[in-house]
Length: 408
Image (cartoon, rainbow, N blue to C red):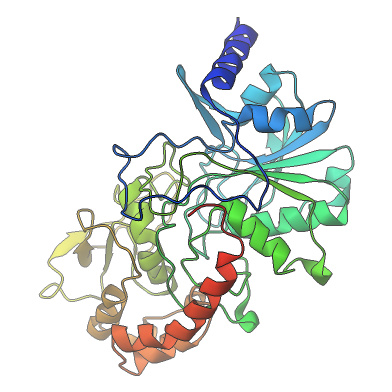
């Protein structure tokens, strides 16, 4: 019964989804530049849902899947995990690899994710977070092809693109082709922020891109390959399965939260701006039901920050910053959608904190990708003055980015 359900689902998808060309150099037709809301735009067909475009590539192959809870296919009967679908269609999936937050997406940020088994399928699940961020030759030796299917949110410090880098590198070193099943970038409508400096490379920033890069996973994979960012300039045997009905101006609400602390579209849109607080003594909503939609600290004055909350232990934040302490700050859960980074919240919090010397921590430089931003804020520069210092870097990046765009 279970198998018949998935096979009927597969037939339904083949009938309803029109397969288009999947060359990585093809672009979708020109579209109205005006931003489209989900209700106005035709339904987006993700790369994973275009089964007819990639199932033939898996025939007779031993397959490894890099995925998590976002690796789903939407059908008329609901959302089905990619691995469940492939196994039901007799694809020889041998093992899965999990990024930060784990295969089912329940681990805290920064929590070590251990190897194990997927309880639904019994497949071995190997962690790519912690000490083992890159698949080893031993882990890959029985595999003929890799599939990468993870929903990103378009911020440099969101670690799924770092996992993509290491998976591509391992694939290239072991002569294994890799398929990236593309998904929308919910922050793909703009690029902004300082460009990472190579001296400040880390797992929360590996490449010389701005904080908000405006690329889908498939486009970003092409940039990694094309700019020869992999070790020794090697290049992966990469193929991107494109989406249908997507462009960078289309507003997209994710059907599954990409990590425990990004519960909705508002949090995802605010994340590139509020994540800078992770490198300060300000809580960015962890330990609340409005993660990355509020911020606050016991060190901010109540007379200037009338909103308050108390962080508590919850899923994805067992020990949040300022656990059990009253924090004063702002509630941004109804703030209009951003189309650029907001620095005013960060700058004003620094100016108003009780102890400026304790405001920043060492993680801030990793998030910014440079020590300049902290110095600019400490020197009293305005948000617009700081933004102006990014412009030449953003203009240069935009030229490079153009080469790898698959969508308008």
